[in-house]
Amino acid sequence: MKVYSFFTEPASYTLDLVDNVYDKMSIDYCFLNSHSKAYKNFSDRNNIFLDQMRIADRIKYLLYVIRKYDIIIFNSYDTLSFIFIFLINVFSLKKKYIAIESDTQLLIPKIYIKRLLKHFYLSIVFQNNHIFGLAGGNYSHKDLFRNYGMKEDRIFLMPMMVDNSKFYVEKKKFPTPFTFLFVGRLLDTKNVDKLCQQFISLFSNKEAKIIIVGDGDNLVKYKKSYSIDNIVFVGSVYNDELIKIYNNASVFTFPSSLDAWGLVVNEALSSGLPVIARKEVGACSDLIEGKETGFIVDDMHDFGQMMLTLFNNSELLNNYSKNASDLMKNNWNYQLYNKCLNELIKKIENDVKFGS
Image (cartoon, rainbow, N blue to C red; front, top):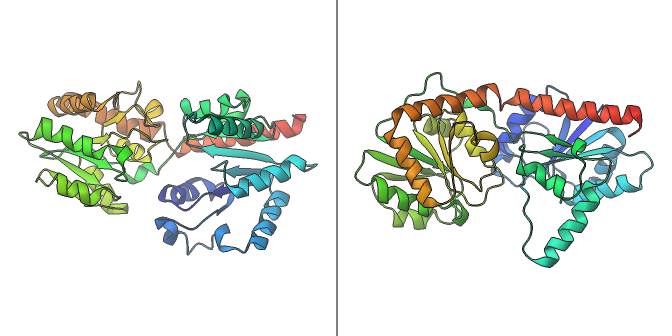
C-alpha cells in the first residue's frame, strides 16, 4: 500500500525519522510549514512545503495525495490540511485510511465550552472507521484516542523517537565536579528557576554544578538572578556540541510541569544519564516508570531529594546509567518504530481484504 505523511514542520527528530525509517520504506512526505530553525537542514532535499504554495496549488496537491495514496499519516489532527482531507474522505465513495500521530496526553479543557467543542469534534473524527490513532506512548497518550471513542484495534503505538545512536557512549564516564544538566526552552512551565533554587539550597557547599542549555524569554532574567560560578547558562546548543554536553554530564534534570513528551529525555537516557523528571512529563510512563532509569517526582522538594540521592550514591548512579543506555539501545529504538508502522499497514491491509 502507498503511504504518505504530513509533518507539521521540520525538526531534527523529523530529519532522523526520514533518514532511518521513511526513506528506507519508500514513504513520501511533505511539511505543512517551513517556520522552524531546522528548515535549513531540509531546504536542499527538494522537499515540499505547503505554506510556500498558493492556496489553489495547495488544494490541488492535497487532492493529488488523496488520489494517489492509500494511507495518509498526519502528525496533527487540527490543521486545515487534515480537516480538508478528512472532510473529502467523509463524502468520498472510495475511502482512504488516515492515521493521526500524536504525542499529546489526554488533557480535558477546564472551560466548559472548550470542553464541549473538543469532545464534539474529536468524537466525530476518532469514531470514523477509516481513522487510526498513533500514540507517542503506551499509556496516557493512548487515552487521548480512547476517551473520544476510538476503538482499541485502531490505536497503535508509534513511539516518540530520536536517533539514539548519536548519543551512545561505549562506557559512561562521570565528570568531576558532579554535573546536573537541563536542556529545553526556558519557559515558566519548565521550572528552571525552581531547579536553580533547589540546587543552591542543596549543593552550594558541594562539589557540583548545573548546566542549563536552552533559550527563551527567561534567559536574561535567570542569568541575572543566578549569577554564581556553579550554575552555567550556555544558551541554545545543537548537534555535536549538544551531544558533547550530554556526554559530560552526570544526571539529567527535567522539572517541567507541562510536557506532552519531552524528547530531551530520550536524548539523555541514550547518553547514559539517569533522569529526574516531574510526573507531568509524558515520557515518564514509558521510559522511566518501572525501568530503574531515573526518578519520577510530584514536586520540587522531592525533586531536590532525588538529586541528592544520585549525588550521594555512585553505585545507584552507575546502575541507572547502564539501564538507561540499555533501554534506548535495545528497546525504544527505530526497530520498534518500524515494527509499529508495519503493524498499522498490515491492519489496514486486512481491513481492505475483509471489507472492514
